[in-house]
Image (cartoon, rainbow, N blue to C red):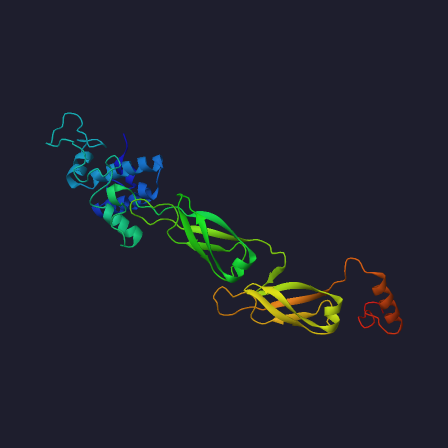
Length: 309
């Protein structure tokens, strides 16, 4: 049979206040609501509660000290003091096999939660517990991530949810949807849904910070004489003037045609890099012309680079 004083970690000479303090400390440590689904902890809490049920009552404590009742509160030997053990006169069962103490559980949880929660259980005696978070992936294309978009995802419970992709969203950025996770218990709130955004690569655009980069092929004639072309941006097509005598590598900047920052305060630019592109096959007439032209011109594209000195 257990020693009730050892169970509470006190001595037989401990005062009522010391016994109560010891019980409160252990009850907070071993309470099943703070250690869900742990049978060993639940058993320990029962022992602590039973010990305090006797030692916390002056009359029963005296009977226990005199050996008239045992650690379970049952009468021992030939003694008879008018006490009949009928359960828990100082407390009552509350859904866990009869081991919660009425006089102290409220105070214990007031200590644990700073007075915000006098009753840790919700409706029907179910312990309050926030629902678990869930994680989803949502794939969007480059333009949707840059300019913002509306998407629909399927939730764990089979429902669908429309979400807003903010302009400027980055690859692998996580959007938190509050209370869209698994249901809570005992009236506690639902968990959250965390949606990781995955951005598909674009065949033309690339991103550096909030700027969008685009390589634009142009013909030899367009590079020499200049022209006006229609080019794509993340917000639609625009007309761009190609200056005469443009070279491969020339950068044209379209101000404000890049990506919004996530807060919408600034917008990047679109940078167009020109690429002078010859036909896949050139005819004899073009080759003869260029050969004759180059003989009359001092034309060396490597002359001023310093790479071949």
